[in-house]
Image 1: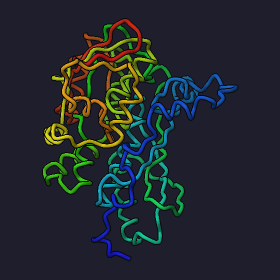
Image 2: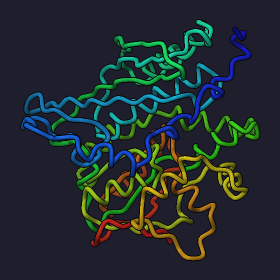
Image 3: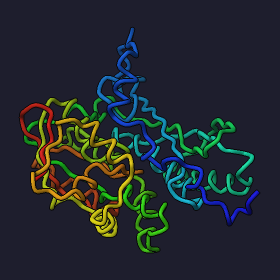
Image 4: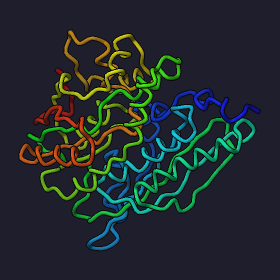
Amino acid sequence: MNAPEQVRLTEFSHGGGCGCKIAPAVLSELLATTPVRGLPEALLVGTETADDAAVYRLNDTQALVATTDFFTPIVDDPYDFGRIAATNAISDIYAMGAKPIFALAVVGMPLDKLPVSVIQRILQGGESVCQAAGIPLAGGHSIDVLEPIYGLVALGLVHPDKVKRNSSARAGDVLVLGKPLGVGVLSAALKKGRLSPAGYAKMIEWTTMLNTPGESLSEMDGVHALTDVTGFGLAGHLLEILRGSQLAAEIRFADLPLIAEAAEWAKQGTKTGASDRNWKGYGSDVRLAAAAPDWQRTLITDPQTSGGLLVACSPQAEREVLAEFARRGFAEARTIGRLVAGSPTLSVV
């Protein structure tokens, strides 16, 4: 067995982070025959609109938000892997406008290949994020598997009237993105041994930043819809808003916040396999300018692990939303486009 310092976690992964999510088109096919029967009235959000978490009304002032998220390693450092996976899982609670209350660990490890000390560091990384979010890691479940898998079941609370769905956007809303794009590209460069130390530092910085503005955004009447950008890329998760809200969107590529080194690698052709799978899954619902270079397509389809919040808000609330992101340390949050009446299509200009 390798010594802990020699283990490269990404060598065990066929696809790391949210890049290992099942492609949108395949997922739709898998779920097409899943029956939806006898849903209780208290279930405010279920599977009907591909939202970030389920929401169940407990009483007039509280609703329980529940989600689970886990994946294979996106980085080699076990502590960083644990932090990224935990941050990503808790993000779905914030994306519903809720306050996280506790989490359970989901752990699958190849026990014959990984030293106990490595697995311990993964768990410690996840626990550190729960501590930063102010919640206990209250238990979980573990199994022996071929690839390392780690994540959380996360639970939160929100007022039933302040749940932020991805299906309640309105025509005329502006779109604000909380984090820069490019994590998937950086992970691809890392796996090839080409990512710079500065690029790795940026990757860790963004993937371990908790999407805490979500809780405050739920208090703003002008915020109509909210989601987080993860494995389906910016285009895929924006399409979920468009399909749920029956609207079209126009975004300006030049206004997208990008991780600088990721943009450079994308221009050189570096991308994940999930990027192409995402593009095929969108069908004709995403339209790029005819002259747009391939690297721009790479970045709008790039799978984001622990990506940013995507907010649909009234123009009157735009300044307040951007100020809240800035107050929480999200200096690169940007307005990227707007929603308009029309069939659910995304135009990138």
